[in-house]
Image 1 (cartoon, rainbow, N blue to C red):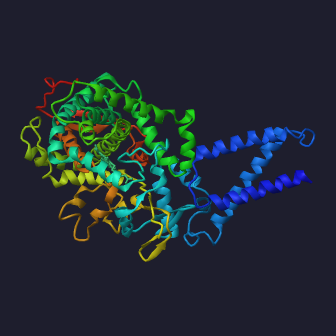
Image 2 (cartoon, rainbow, N blue to C red):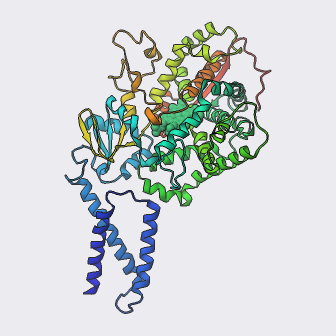
Length: 549
Ligand code: HEM
């Protein structure tokens, strides 16, 4: 009799736990520890009644499992029920049941394509998680003005340190941190970074040639751009103390893969934050810790060094702004990723499209030749900013290459988008990729690379170019702080390369497969290596250019 009662008690405890937890965020690592500890405590308790329980260990595990299964079953029933606040939103059943569905589709890198198809099937509002809605409407841009970031941006250590990119509980602290970062991104701050950009771009040109001659005549351009962007990012963040020299030494410590792994993990498992909490504490999450350790070490070197550059680096601004050491380390790690990955991949995607469509390469080359008579002479940022076609190339690379998913959380009172009420504490996101490729925003040929669509005359009288639908730098209070710097870098590097070289793909390279292999993993990831040959244009001599730091 008491045997049955114990199971009945476990069922009631599961139901009571649901009533207590269903409006709360549960930390995965704590939940895991709870179940483990409960099993041990139960086992020890059952052993005190010898004879009553045949096998105390199995019985303890069974009671805890009953608690968990009841909790899970009620959770699922509630999520599928008409009483759930998002019951009226259509979406696939698996999405309604568990956030693991969104986690799974994110892990494929094709989340943007899967969600795009769901909008075709279900309309502009799709329930993509038990508590998440994606909106395919330009009105949804308004959610970025004031809503906070979703839990997926929470640093899994849960240490409540303030950091510029991650989820902060204090809006004021985040605002203040943006202000401190902003010092580097003023015109004066950016001018101080220009010598590093110029020097690193010369290294890049020599690095490309060196790797071509050391191999089969072609370079893995995605890899070369990653190495360039990390080297330059290191200069920007750590100044003269920067030890990152991937173009010269290769990526011995696996920095690029560590960075890609970290952004990929956050972008995938962030949708099930409880799972990220667990992964953070087990060996599978080791690469994330490795990035943190690298950033910590470089930050310590920088803070304790007396070998400082004449110009300021990011850490100068943060130290002057009174940012404490533990938060300097966190922001340095964020900056290493923010300053490198997206920029590197946008270079790669821009060069891919220019090589795939040589007529655009020629147009850009002609315009640059006209403005800069000496292909190896100075390229001022102000002159480069006057070439709309160059910006058209970059905007198209961003439009087709960045497929971000940027979740926010609605305030407790909820919100309205296009007249539809969305309940409070719902995760909401703009369908960025669908908007960026929608004929309502970009017409004609929304799926094709057409830089002219960004010029005043566009692609003819029916052209539609809805600039605000380009979500590549996000919007509002968490929008990219480095957008102007990124454009300055992208214009400079693309212009230098196009002025000095012609390009061609390696024979057998499949442009279509490359394009289909641009994955969305927080930043673009390239499934297919971009294999290209750079051929010097007549009159270009680079022998005098230094190719080492
Ligand atoms: C093509 C290059 C780049 C792209 C496409 C890009 C894109 C983005 C996006 C989409 C966000 C917002 C994420 C969100 O709302 O969830 C963001 C945030 C941020 N980016 Fe960039 N970024 C680029 C380059 C850079 C560079 C070069 C830097 C600076 C060195 C930078 C610094 C930042 C920072 C600090 C944030 C966090 C802002 C905040 O949360 O308040 N980014 N970036």
